[in-house]
Length: 112
Image 1 (cartoon, rainbow, N blue to C red):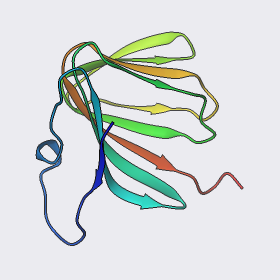
Image 2 (image 1 turned 90 degrees about the vertical axis):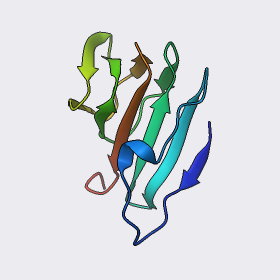
Image 3 (image 1 turned 45 degrees about the vertical axis):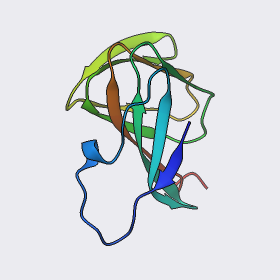
Image 4 (image 1 turned 120 degrees about the horizontal axis):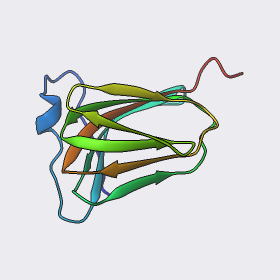
């Protein structure tokens, strides 16, 4: 996994700031703060993002492709433009049915 930051105060097109890498997951930081983060993620076809149980809700917006989201053994397929909230304290996996790009947003405040 690669992780490089987006430069502040410069306009960008979200699907163009992250590239696909064969047989890989690529992560690019958009915003990283102690209260949460926003990342752009590209996942090559057939690759998975297996997430351990997180203490925070996570908002996933698919910006290109199609991916299967499995939350506590319940599966849903997202297509370009669709979003889902992965609840805190749930087991989840993201499977790329085809090359996919997404935005992942975690907000850590409000859990104190």
